[in-house]
Image (tube, rainbow, N blue to C red; front, top):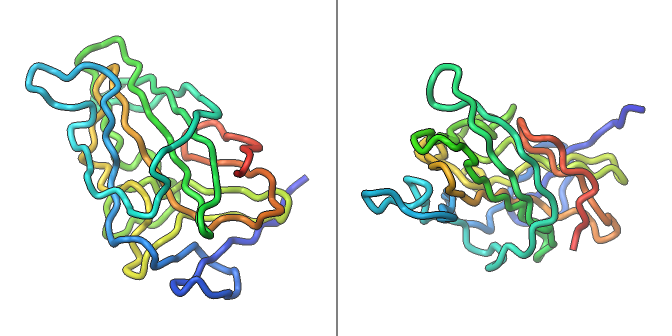
Length: 210
């Protein structure tokens, strides 16, 4: 059976408006980037896991990501012709926070080849339009099956995604990890779970909402 979906919108002023287009919000800073997190040793030059650690994470997000609730292992294209990089995708628990909901994932490069870095770039952009923040974690969306609604990544007043961005400069080394996030308008309190859809990753179905 096919679901007819509507798409949720959050106005910049957080007032109630007709729900017809992508989420927008003005309660976050203009720029957000990947948060690099070293899950293994540094290389000989002392570089951390992601060669760009992205210090511009959005304010207002929960300080701690909580517990991992689901895991997928997938393969992405590497930096060379024919290269395939195995990556573990860990999804953290979802919880509402003052009308918002943040999807957080940790990506770990599982390659056994010590020289096989993985450049994230536009891997997770999906069909989302490319905005001034460059390649972003912008193709992610939430699917509310109860109300047949799709929630897109929020944008600020400057039409920049409230999500990890500038991912063209993020390289994840073998054995290392990087954390990404995307911000959404929170579904209503009577919605117990959502599907989390990330481009090129098997769907995380029926993820509980806190």
